[in-house]
Length: 444
Ligand code: NAD
Image (cartoon, rainbow, N blue to C red; front, side, top):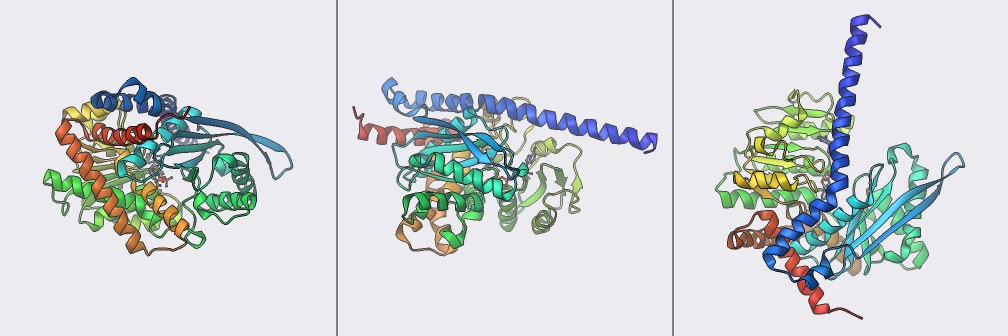
């Protein structure tokens, strides 16, 4: 390698490493403090609701935290143990509900926070389920398909007594999808000797999954954005948007917004951000990702020097749909969008929330904005129990009804109580969980 080429190669390597460290740093920080952020959100809403200590004692903290080590035989014959968690936060309103995440950095604090948000997400949209979340500490990219299958089956087998259509119903999350759900469902059925597909959601349509699940979260985001725009007097046709993250949630959200006439001027994924002020051709971007696995090499826009700057572009709508902890005390003052629609879980920290509120940004909080996914998971569970399956049109109609109603209730609470949309969403949800918990009383 020529010296100058080598120098620029090393510079690129160092830059990449620094960027990775930066991302890892913020994520690590978030993972350590996720549950604290969640409790801070709870405390503010509980204070406004004037909850009594005994009410708080029944609903604030997770009810059951299970940690196991899953022994799995690897392809080379060795046995490796994987740490795994299932946190059931609250089941006052129905069986626990929440995804299972496979990730090398997952920890119990993060799973507790995600389970907490599931309780209040289900409550805010009014579906009769509680909150849970699961995780396995593993980099699934390093496993063979056979190892992934044995790990998935062992997870279900090891904690089988926690699960059941009337107990706790898992679903996919980061790095798990329809195939992992199918293996887990099969393991459950093999143990119980009953065909109970409602034990898990996010299954393939051919195995009891629901039509419409794939785009459900993004469709829910769109319904919320439409409502917000209406309330703010913003015409969606001709409005501008940026979308961070171009996976399941981000890509469909961008496509649906574009179909409503919104000009999506920048999109991003883990490879970087692309900007086109005339509007990105979302269909072309989706085709590119389907072919190449990411936006790398996408020619439908100019690659931005800093992907993080996407959050700060002067647009009407910003959809964070990638990671947690993206809008923080460090950049919130530079985020200029009028509507921030949280497709991701936990993209905004509490200190950023305060900054955004001060300048009057309209934040549609995650527990409301991305609840379309769990709503259609619930509809899948309902269809499994009936053994009768609906068309996509029917599923989307129900989804719209749930989302529109939830938005209106939260919006009215925001106005009446003079709080942010996030505090209002938690107030509505906490009120419902408290009521269910009080009506059931304390068995002892
Ligand atoms: P995904 O894995 O399909 O997509 C994630 C996207 O984010 C990818 O395009 C990835 O490249 C991108 N990304 C990763 N790091 C990035 C970075 N530093 N900058 C910009 N982009 C980056 O995941 P998903 O299912 O779309 O989930 C995204 C978020 O939405 C997560 O917070 C998830 O918990 C939340 N969520 C998802 C659903 C669902 O139904 N899938 C439901 C509710 C909430």
